[in-house]
Length: 601
Image (cartoon, rainbow, N blue to C red):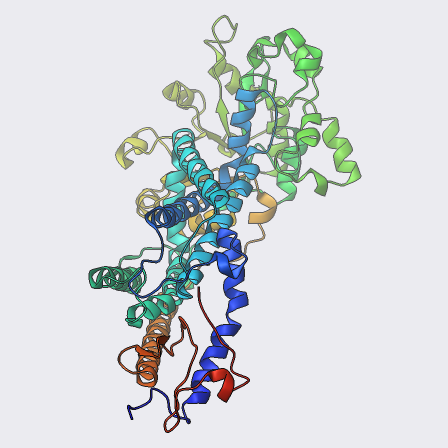
């Protein structure tokens, strides 16, 4: 008698395998239903030995799904790290569209929704492949993936043109998030080791990895990425990896147009709120009215921050400098803040604050200087030259100096003079002013111009640059920083001050986020890699042992007995009979009434 495939002692193991496979059917039904709307079992097809996991169209769909996942992830990370500049983006759209809408937040929500959708589809596909199912992506999902891909490509292209500096922000973010992205990447590769090992050792069930070359390529790519992730910390740089004893003082906070999250920008209320929130300096923008009164206004028109459209409907887009001070006094400069709520913070104002914000008016430069003088705060401001035809077009510098020297009580050393026009004349007229430059020039040139501070966009942040200027007694102020991670990075790089919209948040930070010592990071790196390697090694050993054990149970080759294909493995093509040593072949229903027949079609 020919030796049987299965002994009585091994039958319970086989039966357990079969029942375990049967219990997977609800799980597989759920996967196939969500991925391809194949909720019924007869709609699905298993990948038989020698078959590919899907048709050419479905292979292309799967490749497209992977590419879409990568692009949606890139865009989501890119736009989430750009939150520091959402307000500028929304006001840019207001200037072009003529109405206010929080486009930045809506774009973030859409990006998160597309990424979640594509990530779920990819997870379903991987699970189906692990279950040996042929892939079939429903046409509705195919359209959804194409829409997600088109949105990501279009959004990246448009925002790269409009907000090119955000890519620099993205690179800066890696300086604080790279250690944690490394851990996340290693975790992801560790999770992927299960399906990779499953297919690598599953030599009898050949689906997508049926060609040995393909198996080698997949395994080689996986190992290459894994090794790169294990070693990437060797080339990683982060200024936040330092001993806390070497950390400098927290950068001083300068209120950007006051405290624009708590009050209408460039109003007296805004600057009072900035002082209350702990601001050590105040920043603003100065324009000169048609009759020679310097006042505070960031935009070149009055449309965004006043009710000029109601009071002077025919002059909505007229330059702000072409209005007299008498006309400017009639405008409301606070109601817009409550109506548009640019930072989503108006709800936090109390009844008195809301009433005060509602009645704010355009602020004069003199009143601004008086408040700074009384509170002992430094001031820094941009000064706009009036347009052609303005009476003070050629004397705007001297008129501004007159207000500082003769019409206010502020001390000249409290003023950080930023305008670069006629700087030599200004130094002669008032040598006590603290001259500030917006250009990243060589140290020698800055010293020749008596520059004591640089006012630079945060995207130019560099520890080496800040240290070089600090050695020459030139401090660095970075603008505009409102996110905690950016402020933490500025702190770690050694910036002396930052201009911010979020005084109330940054002032409460007692320690930089992501700060850790080199020894702590090395320990985290080594532990992550060792734990990951151990888990991956165990997973591969487990799958090797499982395949060897199953091969022993079923024999080296499939057997045809009475025309029936018998194959006891984790994946069962068809089971209709079991031959027990010493007994003739019989129907399993006759010998084991509780052993269900399981067939795949």
